[in-house]
Length: 129
Image (cartoon, rainbow, N blue to C red):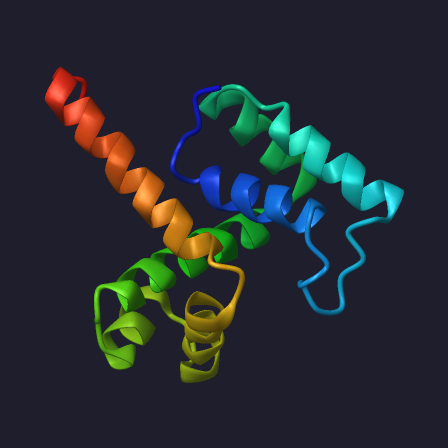
């Protein structure tokens, strides 16, 4: 299955969450949550992911998730909070919340960044970028 960059965080987090009881305040064993994970895992392309996410989420929610991913990536590169706040429009509290999940969460952000970097390297070597 080909996974695009913006879909990876959702897929990885939901997949891991399905098999983990570590996510606080979240019952991943509820049937509707299992169904959501299965729905996301069934997506095969960027177009399918865009269409599904747009039907599922508001434009604001999609934008928020994209900005959180951006903030996490910036944090992982050591970018100062003030720069992240300026570029994302997030408050310092939101940046701190993203940092908390990046550093003490399930490891989903870092897993995605590693996979994304690996996929980009393969594409560059193949001349696909």
